[in-house]
Length: 392
Figure 1 (cartoon, rainbow, N blue to C red):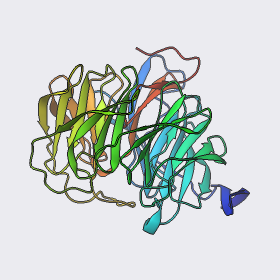
Figure 2 (tube, one colour; figure 1 turned 60 degrees about the vertical axis):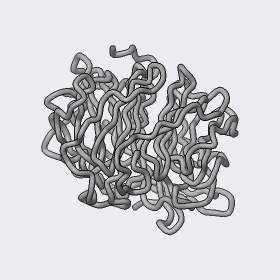
Figure 3 (tube, rainbow, N blue to C red; figure 1 turned 45 degrees about the vertical axis):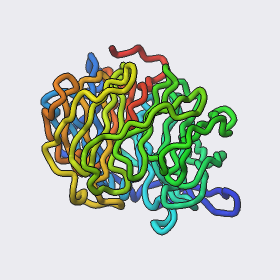
């Protein structure tokens, strides 16, 4: 590995290295955004990240595998984000604080399938997010710590430029579609935190919620937050205007046992009318109409148990779950189970082994040889490359 440069954050040395030794192995399938560069039309793909690997699937039936790339640097993943404009995937890897140790960031170029850089951190790293202009990453220091810092990171270089002090156990992160706000989910807090991306200062705290903020999603048009919590089967709805909890929705299934949160996965359809919540101990997805007062409309039984461990195992190996609706709202991807669910029929229509062994995924759509928009596992509205037209 060739040393490129280093910098100090506070009193800690943070290194930036050119990852000549963190290379990839290509699968036999050759892929460049849905065919040869410049191929006409819209191509929609789902990216799934088992340990040390990137699998790319068609995002519509028959959900065929179109590329598999071996990425040794993507070991012990904690989060992934993508910038469509540059075609760069950013991954947090390694420890997520506390007893699990420190982490790192890795930047990977989808056009060349090569690692661009790797930056070691003096803290853990966790589920990151990127601003729509592709310039800034928000990287939590990890759910295993009682620290309260989200690092502000320059996406082009990986250099830390600032920090936000929010609440203990920095874990999950969402940036608003207009890039003005970042939503911070601290595992060891009863408050969802909202910060300004202009000032990197906290502007609102939402709660008090059920103890321990876990996966969440945002309906910005109606200024609503949907949050899950440690040990709670169900979700809460809160106002982003007032910061108050509006309703608490328990799910009347046997509570069972799970890895911290039985509802470790929540997602909205793009039209914001339907909310899906995972039920890890019972291997179900519960579907709600949230166009008005939340109303449960379907219970989708998953075809594979969520018990056991991911294989291969990277860091946290238990099947904790996550959910993501596609950008057209037609299919729901169930991470750590492998199911693809029809949103119209509320039934499982496909099973993908790679998806059963990863909780890290996003959709990335290409037009010809150019990536144009993405939608991640938090289910908020898509990000689109500057200057590209909506793909419809």
